[in-house]
Image (cartoon, rainbow, N blue to C red; front, side, top):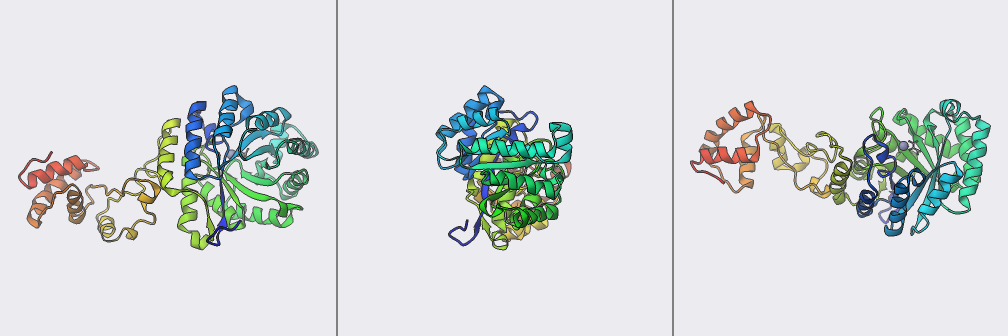
Length: 393
Ligand code: KIV
Ligand code: ZN
C-alpha cells in the first residue's frame, strides 16, 4: 500500500499483549490488558494481538472485551494449528470491527523431531487442514511457520505454498529464536517472494526476537526486502531477550524515512506514555540507556556535547524528544559539564548569573560533581544561591 506522500505503508502489528506477555514475570490482569489496548489504539498500531484465547478464561475474556471495545484497529486471535485453539480465537474475536486469525505451526527439523514428533508430510497435512478449517470462519488468516529461520528453503516454501493454497492471506516468517543475521533474514524474504507460488496474493510480515540483539536490524532488513508488516512489542518485551521493540523500529523508520521510502501510522507523541504504561504494568524497568525511551536517551553530560546542543539541538540529537512525548531534553550536570551548560540550567530556573558569580560558583560545582555522579537541580540552586549570596527556595 502506498501512502498519501507516496511512501510504502508498513503495518505495525503489536504483540505486547501476547508475545510480550510471554516474558517471564510479565503477566497482566485482563483489566490491565484492556487499558493497554486503548493506549495502543491511541498510539496508532494497525493490529493488536491481545492474547491467546485458549490459554485461560481470563485471557479469553480480555481478548473478547478488547474485540468489542477497540475500534479502528484490527484485532488478532492467536491459535496453534489445533481446532480447539482456532474455535476459541474465532469466538473471542467474533465482535471485533475487523479481525484476523493468527495460526502457527513449527517448520524446522529440530521442532518437528523433538517437539511435535511429526514428519514433514504430517505437518503439511495439519497446516492445510487447519487453515482450511479456520477459513470457514475468518477471511484474514495469518500463518506463521515457527522457527522459520532454521528451516531449509525447500520445506519452508512448501509449507507456505500449502497454506496460501488453503486461503492464508498473511505470511509471517518468524525468527523465533533470534538466530538470523540481518542480511540472511532480508535475503530469505527475497527468496520467498520470488519463489513461492501464490505469493503475490499475500502480505508478508516479519517477527524477530532479540537473542543476539538483532531484532530491530533484522526487521529493518525485512522492510528493505519488501515486507508490509512488522510484529513488535513495546519496550521490546518478550520471551528471553524479547521481541523487536516498537519504539526503536518505528523511530528508525521515521528518522530514515526518506532513505527507506516507508511510513507507519504510529503517532510518535504517544510513544513515551505507552512505554511508561507497559513498564509499570509489567513491573519491568527500562534500562537507562535504552534507545528512544531510556532515561539517558536524550540526556547529555559531556561539556562539548552540552555546548553544541545549546547552540543547535541537531548537533547531538537526531530526534526531538518532545515529539515522542518526552517532556524535555535534559542536560545532566556532572563533572564533565562546562560553564555554558550550568549558566543555561540556572537560567531555566530564572537565575541569571554574571561572569563573576559564575566563576565563584563553578569551583564549588566542580568539587560537588567530583564527589557524586550527577549534580541535581536542587543542589545546583543551592550552590547558585551561595554564589549570589542569597538563599533560594
Ligand atoms: O516467535 C515466534 O515464532 C512466535 C510465533 C508464534 C509467531 O511468536
Ligand atoms: Zn515470537
